[in-house]
Structure formats: structure tokens, C-alpha cells
Image (cartoon, rainbow, N blue to C red; front, side, top):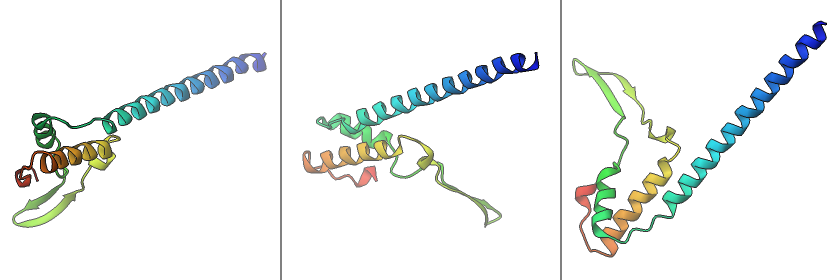
Length: 112
């Protein structure tokens, strides 16, 4: 009797594990599609390029030094690398800046 009662628990835990694996694969596929979409964006408009360059920061805005009474007591490292789309956003910003320089002849120092 104990064996029959424990078998459904094993099967149900196996099914739950399979469902979790399936959900993880779906999330990974969604991330891959989003990465591909961001990598394929072509910049061909000056206003869009300016907007992208302004919206995506040149450096991680979360990195900070915590200073108390003039002494640095802690450092918060840049956390942007934990963003799974970090490389795609940096690449998109780079393509926007290159468009502004190469095609529009603009000075991009104000965006850096």
C-alpha cells in the first residue's frame, strides 16, 4: 500500500519538473527572439537615433560609491551586466551613434 501511495508523488513531481523545464525553455526562446529583434534594428532616421542615444545610458547608472564624512565606505558595482539584453542595448546605442556621426555628420560628445 505504501508503494502505491508513493508512486503518484514521484510521477507528479516528475511532471512538475518537466513543466518547469518547458517554461524555462519558453522563456529562453522568448529572450532569444527579443535579442534577435534588437540586433536587427536598422537605424535610418536622425530623430530615432537621437532618441536611442539619449534613452540608453553610456555607462551603468546604478554604479555608486557610498561616501560618509568624505571617506568611501562601500562601492556598488555596475549591475547592468545582469540584464540579459545588456549587449543588445549597448549595440543598439552604438549603431545609433555611428549613424549620427557617419550619415548625419553630427558631433556626439553631448551623448557620451
